[in-house]
Length: 565
Image 1 (cartoon, rainbow, N blue to C red):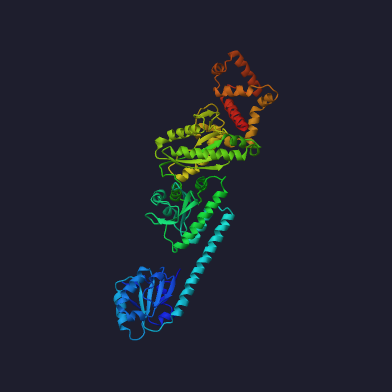
Image 2 (cartoon, rainbow, N blue to C red):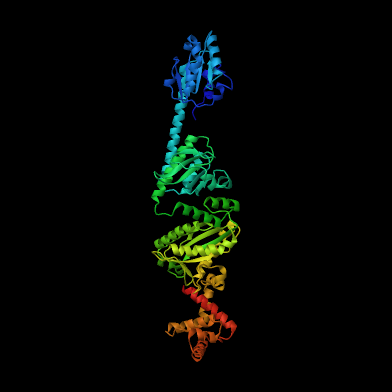
């Protein structure tokens, strides 16, 4: 910080001269805390053209002694030149000068100080200039430290959160990064409560006009710095409180903004920052680790999720990933790059569709081949309609013209024609509880891929029921042993080329053991059907009319189909 007039008056060289402040608190003393940027010694009465503001003027007042009537105009010219203050040395019998100074000082805001002992102006100049140069050197060193710190972050391609944390730490105050839609991408509270920092953020941010340069504006007087390259601005850094050193704070924010812009240019192929922010928040909500509901709502609200009485967990799972998960070489058979492209396309589609509904959402990739969503709805009555509209609109925007249901999958047909299954968890009144329901929705989505011919655009737990339980157990060796024990004879017959037995068994069990209904649906004569069923009973060595036998076979057949996916 530059030295102030009050600090300079406390120097030994001036304190020994017993300085007297003229004008009292209503006059010059009110400006004693103004910074002094230079010391100017002069005996001229017209020096306004030599001043640029912030100078402390030292004079012996000899010219004022000759022309006391010029004292008021002299002080007024210094005040108009934004001088920091005036020190006049009055030694000896200088009553006229003192009276003129006292009269002039009463009507001005410029601090006027009188010393009636001899002062070595050269010593004052040396000491004060040394203080000013030291402060300037300190600023240069601080600027160098800031430059080096953010240069390292640029070279390391540091994440957004880390850059914002670095800026907040250097300033010693909270910093927020938002996009052009006033959604918070990253923030650092720096000791301030998250709920207080992000409370009603979108509304407050909209009342603070954006600028293409560093500026303090808005009703809360926020300091803001644009983020981006020239005309391609994509966000801004905001300092929502007044810092101790605004000049340093602005410098830090500007270097942080440059680092964020450089890092984003270097990461063109990565997901959008808003998607990264949502992914980080969704992961934090699923594993709270002490996160309170109030803080969760504040963070989600800053990303655009409106506070609502109802939150619905949803998972979109691609059919390719479901199939890969069920095979031993699934990791090798699925193209990771294609999967990322499908997920990115889905995230973009979902973002567009949600904007056209009454709800809001957090959407992010939760694992390879799966996209999670927390949908906030203003009323329970809107749930079914919004989910249906979401599924239909996704298919339409993908170029399919509607929702296509095939083998339990809602397909979005684009260039890559990805096949997505939509699983819906139970709606909750709490955001954290809804986030915990993402696992249930993921299980439903995975299991729903095994359902056939349902025509549903999305699935709930009530749609998968026993099949859902079996999907959880299908990889257990004991379960596999049960399947092989129940269906061993049919599997061996299939391997020998004598097919059709598993399909017939499935049709029989799905008809509830009603032979007449099975004959009509299969266009078989009853004698033919009865003969085939008798052969089936012979192979299985069980009575198909026995309810427990049919249940056991049905479970085994469902498990076999699940394993085949």
